[in-house]
Length: 339
Image (cartoon, rainbow, N blue to C red; front, side, top):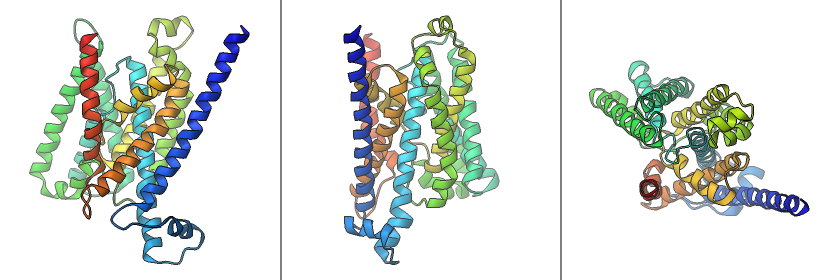
């Protein structure tokens, strides 16, 4: 018994140390994101921009361009990674993520429809369209995946998500072809980008992401039980239906707000939870906070690469993620087929 307690105590200390190390790496990534770009900025300028702001061009770039962009990359990465981890835990589907199961596509479609009908009306309105689209897509995929003879299997859920994503994307493309105005207003956004955002947008999206993260973290123990099977969760006194509803609300808030502010960025919610489970095991009380940190780091680093790879121009971060996520997705498909 003492050996067991000591093992869990040592493991907890190690996991806490890992979180602290993750925060440190995230902090370094944030500094690198503020420093590197079309105009390289020194660490001294970064420090003085917050302690002795003088209105110089470098200080203005730091405070009005680089910092908001970096913070949005952090929030979007954390939100998408946690949303993916929750979806994989609820469905027990290793291929589940907001991008694969059509949640991102539904949110993007709703924003395109909103822009087509109302014009450029601001992030708050876009956020509600994105939430509605994400929720409707999630319900539709779950319903379609349950129609097969075998019920809601991993394969059925993945195929339903892929089919719905293709269908929604086709309609979205049709709207953009018909309406040149809509295309011009959100063309860069559709590729998935954190560029051109300001602190006002950060403050507008922050409440939605924070509520989604807090709700997801509060449900981490219940998600762990659900990931072991509904029968197991019920036998331990869990109200599985109520937990699924709350978890779905968390996913919709996280994915919807991310799509509203940065467009549909794929693969973050697919790659990060698998990496985290390899490091920390199957306990979602650790998987979710680790996913938030690792997801934030991934998107920040991808955004740095996106602005450096074709200098002086830059790519949307959404175009960088498939370079990482697509090979990993192929690996997962092959692994599932073998099993």
